[in-house]
Length: 258
Image (cartoon, rainbow, N blue to C red):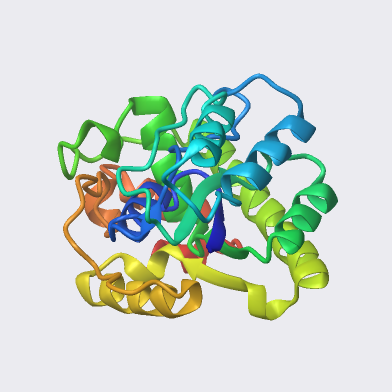
């Protein structure tokens, strides 16, 4: 039995990634984001105990022990029973700030011999744009409409999302450092959003994660989630020249291209 946790922050492609990892019949994703505070109002200790249980199903999936396991983990309101009881890999995704007690989380993962994927995004301007479009304009992959129209940015509002992007990435880097210290580097894999924005990158990312997680038959297939923001900032922002002028000469200038 193998288990994993995908640790991410918003607008980094986590939905596509977890859906694709969960596509083989041998992989079981018990819920979309089962430990989030909006999803389940219980204590952190109860969340971690649930994770410990769902990552430790009985070997025999045909009798009373398995039915009791299903009933136990079914206390989480977002839990969905496995379509294939013979799964051999189980995992789900979680924001890096969902569990405040990182030490308790990491010790639980260490006890379970779980793997951890840390999903990040490198380009702060493009990440801030995704956050802006999602929170300020309601443009996202979840409506499954494909690329949405370009945005005319309120630059003062946009800069607040730049600062939020910086803060989220800083939290993720801190979590990575803690995880390496407690779990060891071999238990962790870092994935950057930029690595899978094109088809070749998607294929390479899935090959890498299949090896890391020990999943047979994991490959890239078309997703129901469609990228909502063009990768080109010039195509995504109506007032791109104003955006470029706002960040010229700052540490963010390098993120206006590439």
